[in-house]
Amino acid sequence: MFQLGKTIISEDILEKEFVCNLSACKGACCVDGDAGAPLSEAETKILEEIYPKIKPFLRKEGIAAIEAQGTWVKGTDGDLETPLIDEKDCAYVIFDGKTALCGIEQAYNQGIIDWKKPVSCHLYPIRVKDFTEFAAVNYDKWDICDDACSLGKELEVPVYKFVKEALIRRFGQDWYLELEKVAEELKKS
Image 1: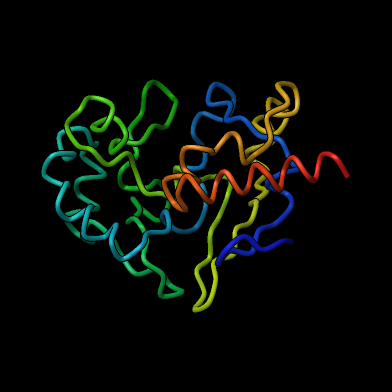
Image 2: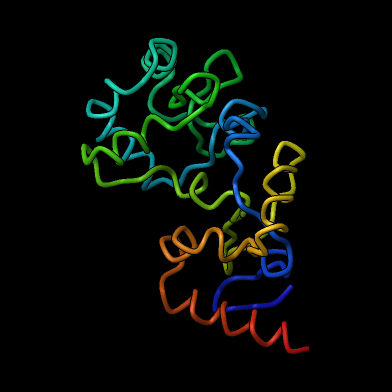
């Protein structure tokens, strides 16, 4: 672990390798698990605002779940998260054949909205836990991502480089440049 500004970071994000392999996993992270995607309070307001624009991209099951539960929910641990369909799929998931995709991201890709998706999804496999004085930045190892770890190793792409855009989105360009410096120093040692 090391500190960068008001973040405590696991060295795993510099040392482990990862590149999403959607053709292998079929977007399992959007349909597996026991909770929706973590959200910030600001993101709950964004979801409320953009829902009418993304609704046409969603499946009828997702629309029903959102209209019954809301655009976001409080999870069993009290955290804010996306609603689920029958306690499985994220309500915002859509499918291209058997591959799960994000309906929010599809609206973004088509220029309908200017918000890509929840930052927790964009950051994956990194998870951020905010505390009063700092944020913990950790690598989340999940067996459904074994193919992504293999592809990352093959392509020699560390986690922090794979999620560069998301890290900059969450912490800013200057923070990311400092992270790169730490990674370079770690390589030398």
